[in-house]
Length: 248
Image (cartoon, rainbow, N blue to C red):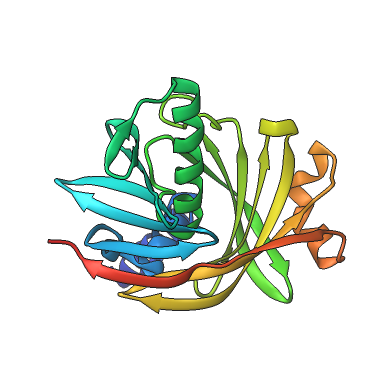
């Protein structure tokens, strides 16, 4: 009887070990990244910041997220608003009719700045597809390397773009990202996060923005080219005067 008991116990232990996952999935990694970067704070706060010549605002209204871009001059106030109902432009509080092509251009521009400002929030949107490519080492640290693509439905005008994210294996924070885009002749960009700060429980970073002159087949090795100093620094993406306020 004692032998049978021991054999049963060993079988159960082995079975449990076989069922245990050997590594995290891409979805689990992204979930952890969003959690450590702000989690529910993203959905319970309005966020305001300046970027270059514009003021930006992300506000919640009746459960919908409203993205704004504001440009002020001596005599003019231009407010671009992107929400679930589409895009609108107001000049000195008056609605300005726009052609669909122009409205889409402005809407994509507004969305792009907000998208990068709140990463990794947004990586669980319905149109996002995630794939774990493996564990790599960048600058002597280990990272989960995750590929992100988008469905055509709900993926926006640039749904064909491909993104890569490097999530720190210890902290789950995305320290690097890259993307391959096709508009305006296309290209590859690689961004390095720096100047991390938390405001209202939300993580914000600035980026060094690099250009990668690579063949399409080399895109997935862009981190290797970065370590070899083969990328060209184009600009720095810096958010200023950030404020986080609980919405009413």
